Picture (tube, helix red, strand yellow):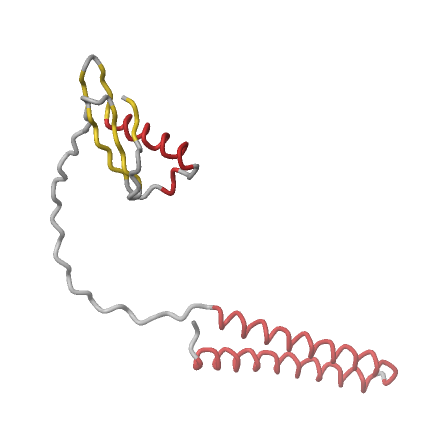
Length: 159
């Protein structure tokens, strides 16, 4: 962002350039008018157009100057930050739980997927509405009881 001082200076410089070119055009026009009075209207029109063009040039110069970034003072030397020590990350072991009984085998992931499917079919709600799931496996009954979002009335899955 340009400061007021920088913008004012740029405006002044642009105005001086425009004033010089306008003065030159007026001088040329005055010389032509003295030489040939019949061309006075044409010269007057040319002067007006030149003044308008010079004004537009000044406006554009001011806009460009305002857009130009202002050079900031050199930054002060920053205090050195202590170097962060790198720590070794513990490798995460792959975990998978298998439940085996009476010649059957299933994983906890499969069981949770089955519970989600049963709950959505039973309630007609979407899977995204599930906030928490608790599954209780009773192998002697060959069933897994579940509680979804605190609701547990008779919900179970056959294993």
